[in-house]
Image (cartoon, rainbow, N blue to C red; front, side, top):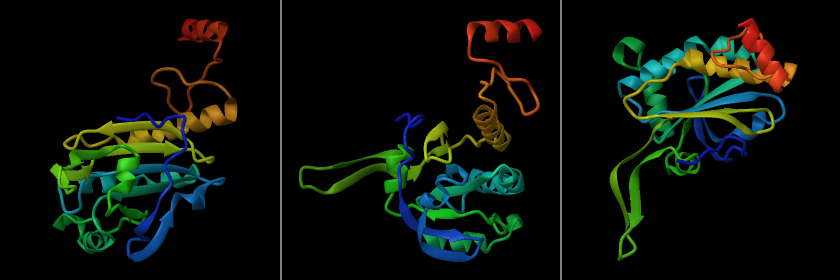
Amino acid sequence: MSVLVGKKAPQFTAAAVINGEEIVEDFSLDQYIGSKHVVLFFYPKDFTFVCPTELHAFQEKLAAFQERGVEVVAVSTDTEQSHWGWLQLSKDQGGIQGITYPIVADTNKTISHNYDVLAGEFFYDEAGMLQAEGELVAYRGLFLIDKEGMVRHQIVNDLPLGRNVDEALRMVDALQFFEVKGEVCPANWEQGKEGMQATHSGVAEYLAAN
């Protein structure tokens, strides 16, 4: 598993469904460079079980992300038509109707591969034919990307393990606190708590006060 933290987020241009209904062919994260932070998250498949709980959970917190100048973008290896069809189904039917943030179609699996979250093994046999062991779908990867396009946080869960959206929001708060204050965030830091100076004396002062 590659560690992308501290590196430029891999670029891509792909089809996506935006605003819950419109299919665009040339969606890219480039539009956010210089102006927005991005939470980019991958999920395995449309029309499944854990995945809709995550997508709805991000939608429920979308206003909180946007208040912080953060765009939420989802990716899976399904087609844009599959995304669109799933968006037409209500929550009580197992659908994701009401999701408004972009859902990218990584149909050729290059985005998942470049972010190193592609589950399954693939190789070329002696005849030059592409072979795969198991389904090629994305793990539950999440990447926090800053305004300069740098990855500042990543986490990858196995397929059965849903993520904590509040934790993603906490990491946004921590990054933005550091960017504004220049102070680092100790263990279990939350918005409203004190940071500390990244010095020996700063650590000592923080530990003494807490």
